Length: 145
Length: 312
Image 1: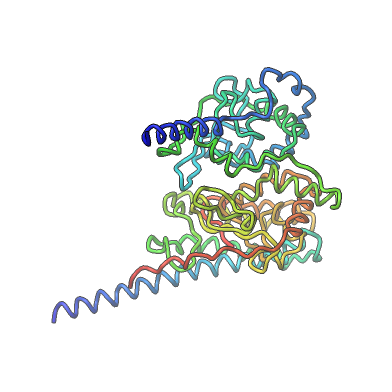
Image 2: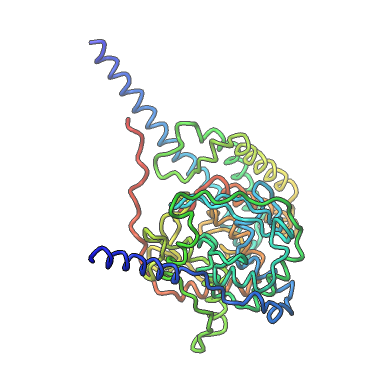
């Protein structure tokens, strides 16, 4: 009887862990996607394909701060593999550096939100914020198609 | 009698293999002065970034792309390669190299000591680089900071640690042709083809290789597993499984900023490639994009099943 209960318990715990792990991978992908979606109109503004719109710029910077604040909690040790994660082992091998990257991205986005007042300050500041994307992906995210 | 015949055959085979595997540099080192003069530093800088040199040769763990101390580990199914120091340090780098030496390295895959290089150094693409570009590149590298210290030796198991065997690999798979512009195509497409197929060496990662490390023509640019085991390299032909929906402008934008049309930012080795490509002119990036769009569409190889979820 005890063994059956124990087995049931383990199965439940195991299933719970697996669910949580799949959830957290999905959650971090969604968080990154939100940042990307907020970037789309801003990227077009930078290329001159869309008119400058301060509200959208601010929205993007707010999305970055949100993702940067959430992200460090979305890479627990039990989520190194699974789902279609493209996170590289470096995330967990250099955890402190990885988390510092998010902190820097958040801080830079916050500073940019204060600094950007018009199109000129936008064009001078925003590209530097965008460098955080590639700067982190180079070390921590696999190639994917 | 049979035994003698057999032995004769073995010896003949060994002699033939030895002959076939001999390193064959394109330029005679004794005549180095003939091709040495006239390199242009500014143009060399373009060749340097188009060739992606810093991605492998820059000293790891720092940001200066012009500090070429080497030492980066490149994992492969054959073992680990370590990129050498190509800074102009006279002893530890390539400071004493002539244009002829760099030409032989890039175009023939042969070192100044007359040994084969491993094709981890992509002479399988660099052989298309023109001598004029090699000369400019040499001039540019000579202006950089000399970095002390040699990189460690490659870590390869037998028989891959025998460089001479690469001669047989080259005899089987290496194309030593030089670049010839196609008069039927525009100047832009020819420039793009040169940059993509030659210095850019895009095919080296964006293709699946066979067990011997060769890229069959049908899989060129069609993507495949990352040779370093860091994910899946995308198909960059205009196939539905590749860049069919991307405009040439989208591709040029990715090369400049690292952003896909969905504003995802490319990861791993491609992030480093983008830092190199961003140093080229917009025209050069547009030419590369135009050439990629002109490739025949090729389907991606089948992907392995997704990473398994841990047993629950």
